[in-house]
Image (cartoon, rainbow, N blue to C red):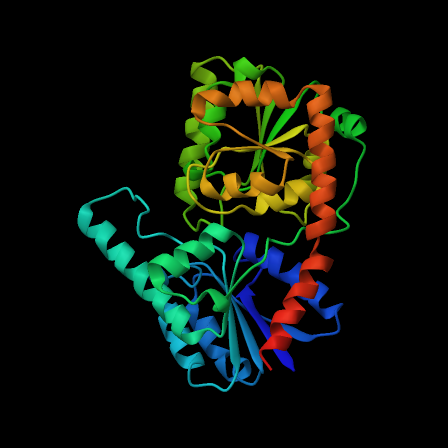
Length: 365
């Protein structure tokens, strides 16, 4: 059985591409014949040029996010339509499942069109896919209740945790990075939905250092001005509230392929994920890979994760973060949360998750 995993290049998209590369490597280690087929995110013609190659495989596994191909998600309609005429089995991983109850900013017409687009695209995915994989139970519930997916078609597999990441001594790494005391880390893309400003405004209430490590632009967001504006907004908050003693910005080109990526995790005591939106998070998985506890918002993804994973502490609202952070940084609590990260890693490392993918592929023969 020949399998193709279809996802963006590392140069055009960081999160899904990085995850997919490591997932494929681990599936290969399970003895499966699986290949990467890459395209430039936001450029659907790259995919369609490779369609002759794609349709030769027995199983085609699509890594999906609504606008990953650009064009407001419309190219996905053409891709799934073409796949429906092929003999191959289709597996779709939906990294995000948007509910029709989701509230969007903007005028009513724009909201209606957006929801109609998601509604239609999800129906097409259901029609064309032999198996759909999601990373959370609540995503499965949305697909069943709002889009009429069959429960048997959906598999819930948590995002696999990267294994064998570089390990560094915390104290030595703090010294190398010119840090001291408690370090609360923001890592990765800096966009409004990730909620940096929520905690930065209160940085003096937690003490320690709120460390913001981010790229000056973001190929994932594909809107560099939006990213730059948000970075500047947060810098202005620090300046206006005189928080320079508590907040540090390290803004430069960085991904998980950069050695400093993992050094920042090593130097951190807690990782901050005060997300406003109802999405998942690649940084959540990287935090666990680095054995670093997480402070998160009460969006559904994190609330569900907290039921079985005690290495995460949830703030009930924006004003609750200082309390949660100060409680979690206590030595006894921090050690307990770090051990929970170790336990979760053992159960959900990519080697273990790859075995579950192998079972799914074999069930489609």
